[in-house]
Amino acid sequence: MKIDGLASGLKTAEIIDALMDVAEIPRSLLSGKSDDKKAIISQLQSLNTKLQELFTAAKTAAGPSALAQMTTTSSDPSVVVTAGPGAGPVNTRIVVDRTATAHTIVTAATTGFSDVPLVLTVENAAGELVRITPASGSPSDVAKAITAADAGVTASIVGAGVDGDGNRLFRLQVTATASGAAGAFRLHLGDETAVTAGTASDLAAEPGAAVIAEGQDAVIRLWAGTAAEQTVTSAVNMFDDLFPGVDVSVSKASADPVTITAGADADARATAAEDFVNRIASILKGLANGSKATVATGAGETTTLGVFTGDSTVRALRNALADAVQYPVDGVSPSSIGISIDRYGVLAFDEEKFAAALAGDPTRVEEVFSGLATRVSEVADRYSDKYDGLLTARITGQETEVRSIADQMERWDIRLEQRRATLERTYAALETMLAKFQSQSSYLTTQLASLPTYDTGK
Image 1 (cartoon, rainbow, N blue to C red):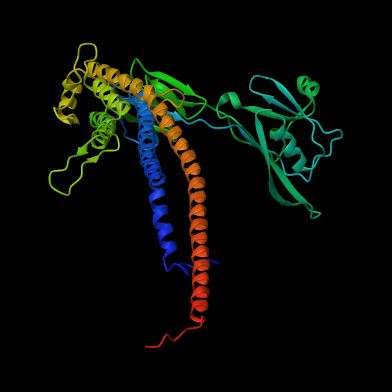
Image 2: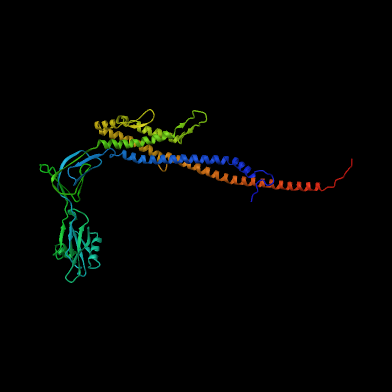
Protein backbone atom coordinates (compact mmCIF):
# COMPACT_ATOMS: atom_id res chain seq x y z
CA MET A 1 0.00 0.00 0.00
CA LYS A 2 1.44 3.35 -1.06
CA ILE A 3 0.49 6.75 0.35
CA ASP A 4 1.50 9.45 -2.12
CA GLY A 5 3.07 12.49 -0.34
CA LEU A 6 1.22 11.94 2.94
CA ALA A 7 3.85 13.82 4.95
CA SER A 8 5.54 15.97 2.31
CA GLY A 9 2.53 16.90 0.27
CA LEU A 10 4.57 16.06 -2.85
CA LYS A 11 3.16 14.03 -5.75
CA THR A 12 5.89 11.46 -5.32
CA ALA A 13 4.33 8.91 -7.75
CA GLU A 14 4.38 11.48 -10.54
CA ILE A 15 7.93 12.50 -9.64
CA ILE A 16 9.08 8.87 -9.79
CA ASP A 17 7.31 8.33 -13.13
CA ALA A 18 8.95 11.47 -14.55
CA LEU A 19 12.39 10.34 -13.37
CA MET A 20 11.77 6.89 -14.85
CA ASP A 21 10.77 8.43 -18.18
CA VAL A 22 14.18 10.07 -18.31
CA ALA A 23 15.92 6.85 -17.26
CA GLU A 24 14.04 4.87 -19.97
CA ILE A 25 15.27 7.06 -22.85
CA PRO A 26 18.21 4.75 -23.77
CA ARG A 27 15.88 1.75 -23.66
CA SER A 28 13.33 3.52 -25.88
CA LEU A 29 16.07 4.34 -28.37
CA LEU A 30 17.03 0.67 -28.48
CA SER A 31 13.39 -0.31 -29.01
CA GLY A 32 13.06 2.12 -31.91
CA LYS A 33 16.27 0.83 -33.44
CA SER A 34 14.96 -2.73 -33.13
CA ASP A 35 11.70 -1.80 -34.85
CA ASP A 36 13.63 -0.16 -37.70
CA LYS A 37 15.78 -3.28 -38.09
CA LYS A 38 12.70 -5.52 -38.14
CA ALA A 39 11.12 -3.36 -40.85
CA ILE A 40 14.31 -3.66 -42.91
CA ILE A 41 14.39 -7.44 -42.37
CA SER A 42 10.78 -7.75 -43.52
CA GLN A 43 11.52 -5.80 -46.71
CA LEU A 44 14.72 -7.77 -47.36
CA GLN A 45 12.89 -11.07 -46.88
CA SER A 46 10.18 -9.97 -49.31
CA LEU A 47 12.87 -8.97 -51.80
CA ASN A 48 14.64 -12.30 -51.30
CA THR A 49 11.42 -14.19 -52.03
CA LYS A 50 10.93 -12.23 -55.25
CA LEU A 51 14.52 -12.98 -56.26
CA GLN A 52 14.00 -16.69 -55.68
CA GLU A 53 10.88 -16.58 -57.85
CA LEU A 54 12.86 -14.64 -60.46
CA PHE A 55 15.59 -17.29 -60.35
CA THR A 56 13.03 -20.02 -61.12
CA ALA A 57 11.48 -17.96 -63.91
CA ALA A 58 14.91 -17.12 -65.34
CA LYS A 59 15.95 -20.79 -65.40
CA THR A 60 12.84 -21.55 -67.41
CA ALA A 61 13.37 -18.54 -69.69
CA ALA A 62 16.94 -19.67 -70.37
CA GLY A 63 15.74 -23.11 -71.51
CA PRO A 64 14.84 -24.17 -75.03
CA SER A 65 11.10 -24.02 -74.34
CA ALA A 66 11.03 -20.39 -73.19
CA LEU A 67 9.92 -19.06 -76.58
CA ALA A 68 8.60 -22.34 -77.96
CA GLN A 69 4.94 -21.39 -77.79
CA MET A 70 3.08 -23.03 -80.66
CA THR A 71 -0.48 -22.89 -81.91
CA THR A 72 -2.16 -26.07 -83.20
CA THR A 73 -5.38 -26.86 -85.05
CA SER A 74 -7.36 -29.94 -86.04
CA SER A 75 -10.32 -30.20 -88.40
CA ASP A 76 -11.88 -32.91 -86.19
CA PRO A 77 -12.27 -32.64 -82.40
CA SER A 78 -11.53 -36.38 -82.05
CA VAL A 79 -7.94 -35.64 -83.07
CA VAL A 80 -5.97 -33.42 -80.67
CA VAL A 81 -2.60 -31.92 -81.61
CA THR A 82 -0.07 -30.86 -78.95
CA ALA A 83 3.17 -29.05 -79.75
CA GLY A 84 6.09 -29.01 -77.32
CA PRO A 85 9.70 -27.78 -77.22
CA GLY A 86 11.53 -28.15 -80.50
CA ALA A 87 8.34 -28.45 -82.52
CA GLY A 88 8.48 -27.28 -86.10
CA PRO A 89 5.71 -26.18 -88.46
CA VAL A 90 3.29 -28.93 -89.51
CA ASN A 91 0.47 -28.91 -92.06
CA THR A 92 -0.78 -32.31 -93.16
CA ARG A 93 -3.72 -34.75 -93.20
CA ILE A 94 -4.12 -38.08 -91.41
CA VAL A 95 -6.67 -40.90 -91.54
CA VAL A 96 -7.58 -42.65 -88.28
CA ASP A 97 -8.23 -46.29 -89.19
CA ARG A 98 -8.84 -47.49 -85.62
CA THR A 99 -8.23 -46.62 -81.99
CA ALA A 100 -6.41 -48.68 -79.39
CA THR A 101 -8.48 -51.01 -77.20
CA ALA A 102 -7.74 -53.19 -74.18
CA HIS A 103 -8.37 -56.93 -74.54
CA THR A 104 -11.48 -57.87 -72.51
CA ILE A 105 -13.29 -61.17 -71.97
CA VAL A 106 -16.41 -62.22 -70.05
CA THR A 107 -16.76 -65.75 -68.67
CA ALA A 108 -19.91 -67.84 -68.75
CA ALA A 109 -22.38 -67.40 -65.89
CA THR A 110 -21.54 -69.60 -62.90
CA THR A 111 -22.22 -69.94 -59.19
CA GLY A 112 -18.53 -70.70 -58.62
CA PHE A 113 -15.61 -72.82 -59.80
CA SER A 114 -15.71 -76.41 -58.53
CA ASP A 115 -12.29 -77.71 -59.60
CA VAL A 116 -10.16 -78.90 -56.66
CA PRO A 117 -7.48 -77.78 -56.51
CA LEU A 118 -8.50 -74.72 -58.52
CA VAL A 119 -5.72 -73.46 -60.80
CA LEU A 120 -6.02 -70.79 -63.48
CA THR A 121 -3.36 -69.72 -65.96
CA VAL A 122 -3.05 -66.40 -67.80
CA GLU A 123 -1.30 -66.60 -71.17
CA ASN A 124 -0.14 -63.21 -72.48
CA ALA A 125 0.50 -62.17 -76.08
CA ALA A 126 4.15 -63.24 -75.80
CA GLY A 127 3.12 -66.77 -74.77
CA GLU A 128 4.26 -66.32 -71.15
CA LEU A 129 2.24 -68.24 -68.56
CA VAL A 130 1.29 -67.01 -65.08
CA ARG A 131 -0.23 -69.47 -62.61
CA ILE A 132 -3.12 -68.28 -60.37
CA THR A 133 -4.32 -70.23 -57.31
CA PRO A 134 -7.43 -68.62 -55.74
CA ALA A 135 -8.19 -69.21 -52.06
CA SER A 136 -11.52 -70.78 -53.08
CA GLY A 137 -13.75 -71.26 -56.08
CA SER A 138 -16.07 -68.35 -55.20
CA PRO A 139 -16.21 -65.67 -57.91
CA SER A 140 -14.99 -63.01 -55.46
CA ASP A 141 -11.89 -65.02 -54.46
CA VAL A 142 -11.14 -65.84 -58.08
CA ALA A 143 -11.44 -62.16 -59.10
CA LYS A 144 -9.14 -61.08 -56.24
CA ALA A 145 -6.55 -63.72 -57.13
CA ILE A 146 -6.53 -62.75 -60.81
CA THR A 147 -6.08 -59.05 -60.04
CA ALA A 148 -3.38 -59.70 -57.42
CA ALA A 149 -1.37 -62.07 -59.65
CA ASP A 150 0.39 -59.21 -61.48
CA ALA A 151 -0.33 -60.96 -64.76
CA GLY A 152 -1.26 -57.80 -66.67
CA VAL A 153 -5.01 -58.27 -66.17
CA THR A 154 -7.68 -57.23 -63.69
CA ALA A 155 -10.95 -58.99 -62.90
CA SER A 156 -14.30 -57.84 -61.58
CA ILE A 157 -17.57 -59.64 -60.73
CA VAL A 158 -20.77 -58.99 -62.68
CA GLY A 159 -24.15 -60.26 -61.48
CA ALA A 160 -25.85 -62.65 -63.99
CA GLY A 161 -29.21 -63.41 -62.38
CA VAL A 162 -30.13 -66.78 -60.81
CA ASP A 163 -30.16 -70.38 -61.98
CA GLY A 164 -33.13 -72.77 -61.93
CA ASP A 165 -32.58 -73.56 -58.26
CA GLY A 166 -32.55 -69.88 -57.29
CA ASN A 167 -28.77 -69.69 -56.82
CA ARG A 168 -27.14 -66.41 -57.76
CA LEU A 169 -25.06 -66.46 -60.91
CA PHE A 170 -21.95 -64.38 -61.64
CA ARG A 171 -19.67 -63.64 -64.54
CA LEU A 172 -16.05 -62.56 -64.42
CA GLN A 173 -15.05 -59.64 -66.63
CA VAL A 174 -11.29 -59.76 -67.16
CA THR A 175 -9.54 -56.79 -68.79
CA ALA A 176 -5.92 -56.19 -69.78
CA THR A 177 -4.24 -53.43 -67.80
CA ALA A 178 -2.59 -52.11 -70.98
CA SER A 179 -4.28 -51.41 -74.28
CA GLY A 180 -2.95 -52.56 -77.61
CA ALA A 181 -2.16 -55.87 -79.23
CA ALA A 182 0.66 -56.51 -76.76
CA GLY A 183 -1.93 -56.61 -73.97
CA ALA A 184 -3.96 -59.47 -75.49
CA PHE A 185 -4.28 -62.57 -73.29
CA ARG A 186 -6.09 -65.88 -72.79
CA LEU A 187 -7.46 -67.13 -69.45
CA HIS A 188 -7.25 -70.92 -69.01
CA LEU A 189 -8.79 -73.24 -66.44
CA GLY A 190 -5.82 -75.49 -65.66
CA ASP A 191 -2.13 -75.30 -64.89
CA GLU A 192 0.84 -74.57 -67.19
CA THR A 193 1.25 -78.24 -68.12
CA ALA A 194 -2.36 -78.49 -69.23
CA VAL A 195 -2.04 -75.26 -71.25
CA THR A 196 1.09 -76.53 -72.98
CA ALA A 197 -0.55 -79.86 -73.67
CA GLY A 198 -3.67 -78.18 -75.02
CA THR A 199 -5.96 -79.83 -72.46
CA ALA A 200 -6.74 -76.66 -70.46
CA SER A 201 -10.08 -74.98 -71.01
CA ASP A 202 -10.10 -71.45 -72.51
CA LEU A 203 -12.66 -69.64 -70.36
CA ALA A 204 -13.46 -67.14 -73.15
CA ALA A 205 -14.34 -70.00 -75.54
CA GLU A 206 -16.85 -71.76 -73.28
CA PRO A 207 -20.58 -71.58 -74.11
CA GLY A 208 -21.99 -68.28 -72.84
CA ALA A 209 -18.53 -66.64 -72.65
CA ALA A 210 -17.15 -64.13 -75.13
CA VAL A 211 -14.27 -61.90 -76.11
CA ILE A 212 -15.78 -58.44 -75.64
CA ALA A 213 -12.89 -56.51 -77.15
CA GLU A 214 -9.79 -57.66 -78.96
CA GLY A 215 -6.59 -55.99 -77.83
CA GLN A 216 -5.48 -53.91 -80.78
CA ASP A 217 -3.19 -51.00 -81.55
CA ALA A 218 -4.32 -47.62 -82.77
CA VAL A 219 -3.59 -47.18 -86.48
CA ILE A 220 -3.34 -43.98 -88.49
CA ARG A 221 -2.17 -43.29 -92.03
CA LEU A 222 -0.16 -40.33 -93.24
CA TRP A 223 -0.52 -39.10 -96.83
CA ALA A 224 -3.30 -41.64 -97.44
CA GLY A 225 -3.97 -42.49 -101.07
CA THR A 226 -0.55 -41.41 -102.31
CA ALA A 227 2.55 -43.37 -103.20
CA ALA A 228 4.07 -42.11 -99.94
CA GLU A 229 1.25 -43.50 -97.75
CA GLN A 230 2.64 -44.52 -94.36
CA THR A 231 0.95 -46.50 -91.58
CA VAL A 232 1.79 -45.65 -87.96
CA THR A 233 0.67 -47.78 -85.00
CA SER A 234 0.57 -47.17 -81.26
CA ALA A 235 -0.45 -49.34 -78.30
CA VAL A 236 -2.25 -46.32 -76.87
CA ASN A 237 -4.30 -43.59 -78.49
CA MET A 238 -1.39 -41.14 -78.28
CA PHE A 239 1.21 -40.88 -81.02
CA ASP A 240 4.20 -39.23 -79.37
CA ASP A 241 6.48 -37.24 -81.66
CA LEU A 242 4.47 -38.09 -84.74
CA PHE A 243 6.34 -35.08 -86.04
CA PRO A 244 9.34 -33.62 -84.14
CA GLY A 245 7.92 -32.08 -80.96
CA VAL A 246 4.32 -32.69 -82.07
CA ASP A 247 2.07 -35.28 -80.37
CA VAL A 248 -1.28 -36.43 -81.75
CA SER A 249 -4.00 -38.19 -79.75
CA VAL A 250 -7.05 -39.87 -81.31
CA SER A 251 -10.36 -40.92 -79.79
CA LYS A 252 -12.43 -42.08 -82.76
CA ALA A 253 -11.85 -43.88 -86.04
CA SER A 254 -12.85 -42.08 -89.21
CA ALA A 255 -12.39 -42.77 -92.90
CA ASP A 256 -12.32 -39.05 -93.67
CA PRO A 257 -8.90 -37.36 -93.59
CA VAL A 258 -8.29 -34.97 -90.71
CA THR A 259 -6.20 -31.85 -91.33
CA ILE A 260 -3.76 -30.98 -88.55
CA THR A 261 -1.45 -27.96 -88.28
CA ALA A 262 1.18 -26.64 -85.89
CA GLY A 263 2.99 -23.33 -86.10
CA ALA A 264 4.77 -20.73 -84.03
CA ASP A 265 2.51 -18.48 -81.96
CA ALA A 266 4.13 -15.05 -82.21
CA ASP A 267 1.67 -13.42 -79.80
CA ALA A 268 2.26 -16.08 -77.13
CA ARG A 269 6.03 -15.74 -77.54
CA ALA A 270 5.86 -11.98 -77.10
CA THR A 271 3.63 -12.38 -74.05
CA ALA A 272 6.04 -14.87 -72.46
CA ALA A 273 8.99 -12.53 -73.04
CA GLU A 274 7.07 -9.53 -71.74
CA ASP A 275 5.99 -11.34 -68.58
CA PHE A 276 9.59 -12.22 -67.78
CA VAL A 277 10.86 -8.68 -68.46
CA ASN A 278 8.04 -7.18 -66.38
CA ARG A 279 9.03 -9.40 -63.46
CA ILE A 280 12.56 -7.97 -63.58
CA ALA A 281 11.23 -4.43 -64.05
CA SER A 282 9.03 -4.78 -60.97
CA ILE A 283 12.02 -5.75 -58.82
CA LEU A 284 14.16 -2.91 -60.19
CA LYS A 285 11.35 -0.42 -59.54
CA GLY A 286 10.95 -1.69 -55.96
CA LEU A 287 14.69 -1.33 -55.35
CA ALA A 288 14.66 2.21 -56.74
CA ASN A 289 11.67 3.29 -54.65
CA GLY A 290 13.11 1.70 -51.51
CA SER A 291 16.39 3.54 -51.97
CA LYS A 292 14.90 7.02 -52.39
CA ALA A 293 15.21 9.71 -49.73
CA THR A 294 12.56 12.43 -49.45
CA VAL A 295 14.45 15.63 -48.63
CA ALA A 296 12.81 18.33 -46.50
CA THR A 297 11.96 21.43 -48.54
CA GLY A 298 10.48 23.71 -45.89
CA ALA A 299 10.40 24.59 -42.23
CA GLY A 300 8.99 21.88 -39.98
CA GLU A 301 9.52 19.14 -42.58
CA THR A 302 11.89 16.24 -42.07
CA THR A 303 14.03 14.21 -44.46
CA THR A 304 12.66 10.68 -44.83
CA LEU A 305 15.00 7.84 -45.81
CA GLY A 306 13.89 4.83 -47.84
CA VAL A 307 14.09 1.38 -46.28
CA PHE A 308 17.04 0.52 -48.56
CA THR A 309 18.74 3.93 -48.51
CA GLY A 310 22.47 3.48 -48.00
CA ASP A 311 22.32 -0.33 -48.18
CA SER A 312 25.36 -1.34 -50.23
CA THR A 313 24.09 -4.90 -50.80
CA VAL A 314 20.82 -3.68 -52.29
CA ARG A 315 22.65 -1.09 -54.38
CA ALA A 316 24.99 -3.77 -55.75
CA LEU A 317 22.01 -6.04 -56.52
CA ARG A 318 20.29 -3.26 -58.44
CA ASN A 319 23.38 -2.59 -60.53
CA ALA A 320 23.95 -6.32 -61.18
CA LEU A 321 20.38 -6.84 -62.40
CA ALA A 322 20.54 -3.78 -64.63
CA ASP A 323 23.84 -4.95 -66.13
CA ALA A 324 22.47 -8.45 -66.72
CA VAL A 325 19.55 -7.03 -68.69
CA GLN A 326 21.26 -4.33 -70.75
CA TYR A 327 24.71 -5.73 -71.61
CA PRO A 328 25.10 -7.32 -75.10
CA VAL A 329 24.77 -11.08 -75.58
CA ASP A 330 27.44 -12.33 -77.98
CA GLY A 331 27.74 -8.81 -79.37
CA VAL A 332 23.98 -8.31 -79.80
CA SER A 333 22.28 -5.68 -77.64
CA PRO A 334 19.02 -6.72 -75.95
CA SER A 335 17.60 -3.38 -77.07
CA SER A 336 17.63 -4.77 -80.64
CA ILE A 337 14.87 -7.19 -79.61
CA GLY A 338 12.89 -4.62 -77.64
CA ILE A 339 14.38 -4.97 -74.13
CA SER A 340 16.00 -1.76 -72.88
CA ILE A 341 16.62 0.48 -69.85
CA ASP A 342 16.10 4.23 -70.22
CA ARG A 343 18.23 6.99 -68.64
CA TYR A 344 16.04 6.91 -65.54
CA GLY A 345 16.83 3.24 -64.95
CA VAL A 346 13.36 2.02 -65.98
CA LEU A 347 13.29 -1.35 -67.76
CA ALA A 348 10.80 -1.52 -70.65
CA PHE A 349 9.64 -4.05 -73.24
CA ASP A 350 8.75 -3.01 -76.80
CA GLU A 351 6.33 -5.65 -78.08
CA GLU A 352 6.34 -4.42 -81.68
CA LYS A 353 10.14 -4.37 -81.85
CA PHE A 354 10.29 -7.85 -80.33
CA ALA A 355 7.74 -9.23 -82.80
CA ALA A 356 9.61 -7.68 -85.72
CA ALA A 357 12.93 -9.14 -84.55
CA LEU A 358 11.30 -12.55 -84.01
CA ALA A 359 9.84 -12.52 -87.51
CA GLY A 360 13.18 -11.49 -89.00
CA ASP A 361 15.55 -13.84 -87.18
CA PRO A 362 13.86 -16.06 -84.56
CA THR A 363 17.06 -17.99 -83.82
CA ARG A 364 18.98 -14.83 -82.91
CA VAL A 365 16.10 -13.58 -80.74
CA GLU A 366 15.98 -16.88 -78.86
CA GLU A 367 19.75 -16.81 -78.31
CA VAL A 368 19.75 -13.23 -77.00
CA PHE A 369 16.74 -13.86 -74.77
CA SER A 370 18.22 -17.09 -73.42
CA GLY A 371 21.59 -15.43 -72.74
CA LEU A 372 19.91 -12.54 -70.95
CA ALA A 373 17.82 -14.92 -68.84
CA THR A 374 20.92 -16.96 -67.96
CA ARG A 375 22.68 -13.86 -66.63
CA VAL A 376 19.59 -12.85 -64.64
CA SER A 377 19.35 -16.34 -63.10
CA GLU A 378 23.03 -16.14 -62.06
CA VAL A 379 22.49 -12.76 -60.37
CA ALA A 380 19.30 -13.94 -58.63
CA ASP A 381 21.03 -17.10 -57.41
CA ARG A 382 24.12 -15.21 -56.19
CA TYR A 383 22.01 -12.95 -54.01
CA SER A 384 19.10 -15.18 -52.93
CA ASP A 385 20.74 -18.59 -52.40
CA LYS A 386 19.40 -19.86 -49.07
CA TYR A 387 22.86 -20.91 -47.88
CA ASP A 388 25.40 -18.36 -49.07
CA GLY A 389 23.41 -15.72 -50.97
CA LEU A 390 24.58 -12.13 -50.43
CA LEU A 391 21.07 -10.95 -49.58
CA THR A 392 20.56 -13.97 -47.34
CA ALA A 393 23.73 -13.04 -45.45
CA ARG A 394 22.47 -9.46 -45.13
CA ILE A 395 19.21 -10.69 -43.61
CA THR A 396 21.09 -12.99 -41.23
CA GLY A 397 23.27 -10.08 -40.11
CA GLN A 398 20.26 -7.88 -39.43
CA GLU A 399 18.57 -10.66 -37.45
CA THR A 400 21.73 -11.05 -35.36
CA GLU A 401 21.65 -7.31 -34.56
CA VAL A 402 17.98 -7.54 -33.56
CA ARG A 403 18.77 -10.40 -31.17
CA SER A 404 21.65 -8.38 -29.69
CA ILE A 405 19.39 -5.38 -29.19
CA ALA A 406 16.79 -7.63 -27.55
CA ASP A 407 19.45 -8.82 -25.07
CA GLN A 408 20.39 -5.20 -24.30
CA MET A 409 16.73 -4.31 -23.78
CA GLU A 410 16.31 -7.20 -21.34
CA ARG A 411 19.27 -5.91 -19.32
CA TRP A 412 17.80 -2.42 -19.40
CA ASP A 413 14.46 -3.79 -18.14
CA ILE A 414 16.22 -5.27 -15.11
CA ARG A 415 18.16 -2.04 -14.53
CA LEU A 416 15.01 0.08 -14.78
CA GLU A 417 13.14 -2.17 -12.35
CA GLN A 418 15.98 -1.73 -9.88
CA ARG A 419 16.00 2.04 -10.46
CA ARG A 420 12.25 2.31 -9.80
CA ALA A 421 12.58 0.23 -6.63
CA THR A 422 15.41 2.50 -5.45
CA LEU A 423 13.37 5.66 -6.08
CA GLU A 424 10.34 4.21 -4.33
CA ARG A 425 12.47 3.30 -1.28
CA THR A 426 14.10 6.76 -1.25
CA TYR A 427 10.82 8.65 -1.36
CA ALA A 428 9.24 6.28 1.15
CA ALA A 429 12.13 6.97 3.53
CA LEU A 430 11.70 10.71 2.92
CA GLU A 431 8.02 10.52 3.82
CA THR A 432 8.85 8.51 6.94
CA MET A 433 11.50 11.01 8.06
CA LEU A 434 9.25 14.03 7.40
CA ALA A 435 6.42 12.36 9.32
CA LYS A 436 8.81 11.80 12.22
CA PHE A 437 9.99 15.43 12.14
CA GLN A 438 6.39 16.63 12.02
CA SER A 439 5.58 14.48 15.07
CA GLN A 440 8.54 15.94 16.99
CA SER A 441 7.55 19.46 16.00
CA SER A 442 4.03 18.94 17.26
CA TYR A 443 5.36 17.54 20.54
CA LEU A 444 7.70 20.49 21.10
CA THR A 445 4.97 22.96 20.24
CA THR A 446 2.69 21.32 22.80
CA GLN A 447 5.41 21.36 25.50
CA LEU A 448 6.24 25.00 24.90
CA ALA A 449 2.59 25.95 25.14
CA SER A 450 2.33 24.25 28.56
CA LEU A 451 5.17 26.24 30.18
CA PRO A 452 4.09 28.72 33.00
CA THR A 453 4.03 32.43 32.29
CA TYR A 454 5.09 35.30 34.67
CA ASP A 455 3.51 38.73 34.90
CA THR A 456 6.28 41.34 35.35
CA GLY A 457 3.88 44.20 35.91
CA LYS A 458 4.01 47.57 34.39
